[in-house]
Amino acid sequence: MRCPEGFITVRNADFPVGDQCLICPAGKYSIVPALYTNLNKTVGDAKDVSSKCNKCPSGADCSGGQSVIPRAGTSLIPQPSTLKPES
Figure 1 (cartoon, helix red, strand yellow):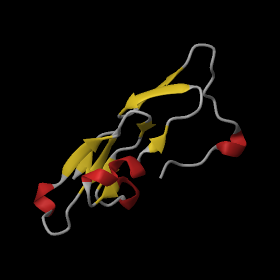
Figure 2 (cartoon, helix red, strand yellow):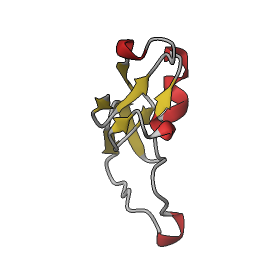
Figure 3 (tube, helix red, strand yellow):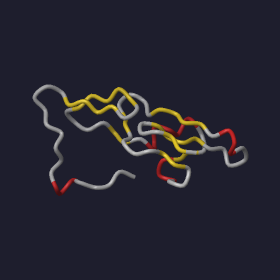
């Protein structure tokens, strides 16, 4: 199963045909697709979805999903020392 950006895959190992794509909640985001093979974006229980989404950066508003909106007068350009791949 492939879930679009902003979603996390929920898979019950005992019932894989019941896979679901659940959206990251407000205050969180994800900008990479969630594939079942990417365990960093897969959970076994819907209540754990938030733990696989990224925390909204300071100076931005995240309404959930893949939404990351900079606040007025804010730059979200990361410094090179803070760059790391999304997991």
